[in-house]
Image (tube, rainbow, N blue to C red; front, top):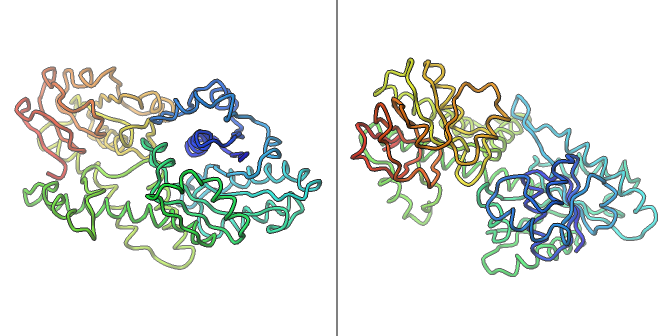
Length: 435
């Protein structure tokens, strides 16, 4: 199929490369000229395992990028992978979605006037129920002069990509969700995902548009709630002097619960869980419902960085101390630092007049760019961060942090928020956040 993707951020770039890998001809429409040049040069604009290889393989053949919306006219369907940033009140900011949809509609108008073929527009961005039909649909109708269901079909197809495993998640998903009211739209999306749907491990979910929109939020809210519950249980275990990991390993043997997402620690961050949970909370309040459980989920998560620093303060006089912060990315395998718990740890250390010295294998430049005023020193290696440090905290469980040497520390005190592998015999104090 000939596919156009509007937006080449984290989702759009990954989806484009993976669809090209499946044999489709894909054009990425992106307003950022630097991103366009990077993709066309066969390079990845973001750090994601497996992505660079696929872009390098398909750029110039099945995959290209452009700033021109006119490119969508040569395609069978368009996936909207536009950002939906978070407003101050937690709600979604739909200005990028509106603007991108308007330009898409303008580009399609000429084609739809002269051809009998329909064009399928698929919302892949994470949006609250009603957005596809009540926001995107009317804009397309206004710009093209064509009614939904006539010259244009409209569908919702949420993504379930995890940073650090996004390529694998796309190519080997547990489910593909198609939200549509038109058989033509459903048939087209089935054809798009045919190589993936052939896998017996992949479930196909066919539903209406609003249900498809809500499935993504429900999915992430459930997982975020599970992590916060696990962290709450971990905090309780800590108060009793029990190892939460041993407790939760046994709990995970219950097939109603499962062993996944059972690692208690510093909490969740990134772009998806925080934004999606906050948007669902804000949306619920707009509908007149108070989401008290989701409020508690966020409160538990937000308290974990402070607890980590308080545990460190039990062993180190933080005022004037030098503290190594191991990890800046919100999780290993990515350079994404959005809502990273490490940044909250650094902020708590600064309020206690400590000097944080941070190291991350890939995310330092991202922090420099996005948080230029952050009061932190950067080290070139984990050992460099530990050199002369009065204490250390583990904020991201990068594999390279396992079996570190702590010889260079002034005070061999480590408080671990992620449970890396350490030789406790090398340390004066080793304490886990929940064990």
